[in-house]
Image: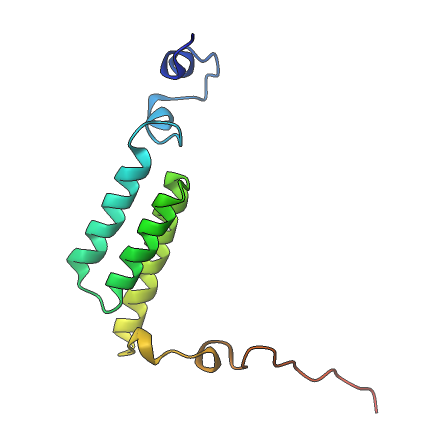
Length: 114
């Protein structure tokens, strides 16, 4: 039986580097590292809503999503919570209307040529 790690290290692809190997989805612990890094960053920031964000990231991890997906989600959530803090807005104060301007199912009027 061939070991996955030995196959990746012997790759003939010159653009493949050891750094890419460490961030590969199949490298053991990479998803956990991405989760720990994102949750640690959110905890240290003490931003309002970070507890919900951490729970969301844990769900992504338990669904076995890739490390890059978890990392990107963590970065986007952190940026959004930071944006809310800078605008003195709590995450609980946001509604569909405040974000999109229209409620769910609302449709704009079609332009007519009168």
